[in-house]
Image (tube, rainbow, N blue to C red):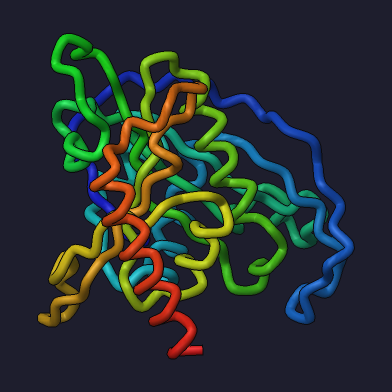
Length: 241
């Protein structure tokens, strides 16, 4: 998944370690020890490894300003995954991350999907910018936990209507993950990404349209459109598997 950032908002997270350390019994052959995964905010000391993982994971290159904004919490909220049992002084080094920002509904590309009420100009969304896990730690549920942190954060904002993201059309593992987590594929955006001179399509995923117990704002027509797109996407994934 790839995304951009546009404006600066004061962050609401402090750099305090949270969450229960998770001892996993699912050992990856690439890991010589039993991981103890813990989650915390991204911090300035993560800058170098954060940049390197983005280079390794994404075909898109991000500007240095993006990484500075992430590690300093300038308009971007973030969560990091670390392995506390990792040897050789790497117990606090990033093995996964998710970055996101708050977007005003009125300024978003999904206003039409949300039955936006202009009298409620303070309504917001949370847009997931990037999500990545280093290769050796994949398939351990880390990405799922990171997304849950974003959803929990969005749910804590009374005026937040939804969580949404873009994913490149050929990233089938990510597509399966978002579908499993109840994100709904709402649109296919043709030529959304330009990578090495070639255009690639993107899918727009939205998390259930609401995160604070409200009714689904989608009209019957939008729901029908979503159903048809979802069926087409599932069919394409089945043909590719």
